[in-house]
Length: 269
Ligand code: SF4
Image (tube, rainbow, N blue to C red):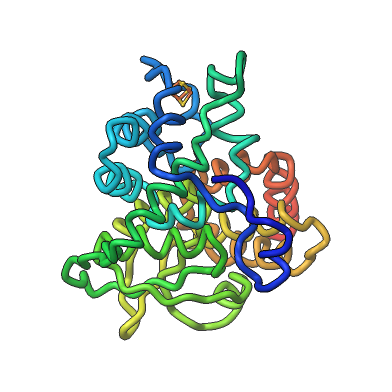
């Protein structure tokens, strides 16, 4: 359907791009080669089964396509609009070698909008498992993390504050971060380490260290993160799973930092 005219856009703050019509979506989806090893999926941070939802759109099955996406991503209308598909799924699409990649982002947006237009957006929540989780960060990743956890029965609180607040003070919370590999590891750690403190619970010290390493990797000038990591290593030295701790440092290319911190602690003791 293309972009709205400038004259129209001057009247409101609506979107520039009108999105795809059903006919255009079917035509675009028909360009997908249904690769046996779909490189596009490797480029998707949440591993949406792209060929599957695209195939459903090609057949005109728009609602099942949206449901298919939502198994991996509860916010396809947002991701279809703001994800940098040109450096993710679409960059790896083999169709890109000739004639341009399949418009995966536009198809995702189309399916999501179709779904929402029919008011099919209600999500059935499973019974609460009684565990309250503070998700640090209320951006797209944090919201996605909270959505995925809610689907698993967790009660989610949102916190857009620095994770260090939890590491430094005495608040006892389940602490999850939105970076998916870390969130998974923290969940796995939570299963083994959770200790109840009132209505909230504390997750592992390893997980907290992982969060701080990531914060430091994002902004190396935040000396408080480094101080928190040092304090956590010192306070939990005897009970830490150092394989897990090292994995966090490795994930953010900070192996050398861990070695330095451990030598420092050795010197101090
Ligand atoms: S890489 Fe492109 S053509 Fe292949 S399955 Fe993914 S979207 Fe379709």
